[in-house]
Amino acid sequence: MFKNINSSYFFLFFLFLATLPYCYLSFFAQPIADDFIFANYFQENNFYELLNVSYFKINGRYISNILIYLNPISFSNILGYKLVPFLMIILLMIGNNLLVKKIFYFLSNTSQLIISLMLSLLFLQNMPIISEGLYWYTGAIIYLGGIICAVFYIAFFIKIITDRNKKGLFGKILLSSLLFCVCGFNEVLMLIIVFFLFLATIISYLNQKEETKEIFIQFLFSLLFAGILIFSPGNFSREATYVNNNNFSYSFEYSLLQIVRFTAFWVFSLALISASILYYPIHQKWKEKSLWLSNSFYLKPWVSVTILFSIIFICVFPAYWATGILGQHRTLNVAYFFFLLMWFINLSIWFNYYKKLDKIILSKKIINVLSILFLVGIMFMGNGYNALSDIFYGKAQLFNNQLNKRNEILFNAMKNPPPKIILSPITAKPKTLFVLEISEDSKFWTNQAYNSFFRLDSTEIYVE
Image (cartoon, rainbow, N blue to C red; front, side, top):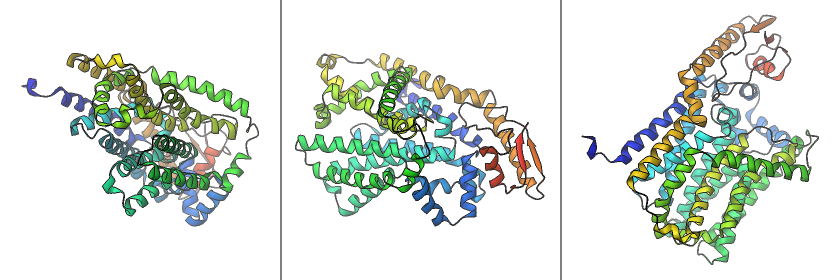
């Protein structure tokens, strides 16, 4: 009976299966730390004034500054909080599917869906920090939210640029509006988009492409939107709080070290290695359809490799320059997504460079073996393993129960605030869910976040 079923459907089934742990873990996510702070700000202040203060005194992220205050817990909706990472996973997969459809339009719907799921899973499995990047609203909305918006922008950009019948005024306005949103999420995403639009403009101009004008207009808009973010008074105020910043040699040296570190971490991945080999026959078909690809995107191999490493540099150097430290790895989540896209572009360029590879044909048996290796890497290594471990060893459920009990105690205390509340420490600390414990010191900022949100200003809250 199963002999008549195409092996691609089996592969597609297991790809969907591999996404389920990430979706399931969404319902164990809990608001922590900054979530409470921004929710409290929203509940106690005028929204317009909050945005004004954020832009002029904190940072210039004019889009994510809006979204961080619209946390579901700002409206006392804990289920909504848990639905956010689930919806982000769905939106990421939809965005990737749209992008794949525009690039690999010549493939079947099934093949397009497989490629988009593989791209989504490659990202989820090897995200530098999935806890802060997906299951914590404040971190996820700034960085992963920006990535998702960027995916939709890139897909629509390709549609507008390549389809001569879709270059009407409405399409251009919509494209520029998406660009405005992308540039407003965070600094590193903005820099990457400006960087790629600059490269696309130069390449298109040097090779006298018809699309040059449209690409150049998008590049000019990206500079305008970047200026809105970069030159906000809030950015200068925040930078002034760091004392070991603006050291070029230090920032440059440590940025190079991080390039080596994260490149090695990402490249030596079973899932990415197997996906890279599986990509070869797709590249061969794509080369026949795309003049850009057949000409290696008009890039020399060494240039494409430089661009690949530049992605990490763009995401790391600004942090060292502005603060003197790399800080959290949420910015590296952005780097990794664009690193993946550029990785496969690099493969195509190198495949073209080594002409002898044209004679290679992957047999069905080899493709099946590589598909199994990909699934093994995705499901049982990196974040895939951590997700399964947190679920089947009960860490996620126990973490969720402990936080539910803690929140219940604090909600009940709001009716008649006691002088002190001693909470039990979190003993379950899943690797995939964001955990930031409060302190034994009731004045510590994470403790104070609970005080503010639960309206327990006169209560000492701490763990013992």
